[in-house]
Length: 563
Image (cartoon, rainbow, N blue to C red; front, side, top):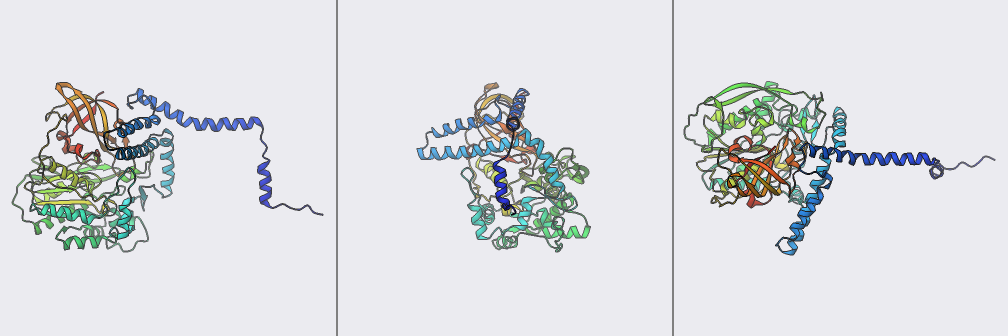
């Protein structure tokens, strides 16, 4: 009689329960896995202690212990004079935000991750997967995820989508104001009260003009690909008297007629030719609708060549030796005024609020040249000086906030203005925070904050009371970033004493600086100069402000650590 065969599940259960292993082999495996597990934190400790010895860290303690500094700060908030319920809430919210930042810092500074991630990312990119921010297109093209989300996502004016975004806050981060109509109409009213015309100019996303370079099945290449709500937004704004310049169709027509791309292959932004076309369209748009007095600045242009790798390629975090994406060369038209590089004029009657689409080819730190950007081209086409307030990223609110703060400080940036052009990336309509911002002219406040006289520097020491957060390199479309620091117990030469608001580099070329790792309580020795001395050069760079709105109104300094 044949032996009865057991089911496979029963055989597996018996075999698992009778695995044979010698004691020596068991101990060897335990030691091996323990050594591998311990190697990661030990290596991280050794690296960060070496960084401190080399002056790259402000604390001799490795980063994993930074959370204890946050706990001390949370206790300080908990024991503040505020009402008890508010103290508990503020302390908890502060600590949750610090835990989030702590986790991101650990991930960003991991020695193990910095070795593995670029190599893993190269493998993924070769298969066409990209990463969470950068999508691989056809023929070496790259696309920024928020731009793809804008054209492929839900209608941004749909009530359900607005409600979803309005409820997207966390314990440590407020929810956005998702409706662009409220912010645009508010600014139009504020400017109209002063006799100023607002022109809204959404800069089309790369995926709007070149969807065929992302998806080979896209056939309707003669029309721009917009979010379903774009036309409705444009119609509603125009019905309320707001002037809207939409250049998307013109860029698609130029793509077809010239056979040349209108956007950079591995970057989020337009080519110099597409930007020049948009500037000429805006010139004609203004001339048809606004009567401007004559002007006669001495402006000329000269060509220049620049070669760079795009910002989306940088977001992929590939090894520095990567060969998947090459640098792209473009020809610029640099604008000169009296034989010097063009500069904005605060007394001009045209003001442009712009984001990175205005900064590209203008802000040298972006790597695509200088004095050849959208606002420079507009100034040349108009034949008149132009004022500008520009900031990379957050086009939905950043430049309006800059304008509002200028006014609140008693600086009337709108004096003499006839036209305000608000340029922002169209994708902001779907993902931006459309904050409502006051534009009231205030009085210059008395201040106890240290600001050196124009054209001078002062050396000081002080302690960090609070600071803004730096983004993780590779998670944003810009390789440079500036943070704001509230410095207390300031002492220095020439009787400088009190407090200071200091802007410092937190990220350069997609790498964190020492300042990105600063924490409250850190003692610093800095060389300060007035922000006004460097604002023309640095104001357009992506910047994070302090949360305290009263501190945002104080005059800032530019700071550099003393060696």
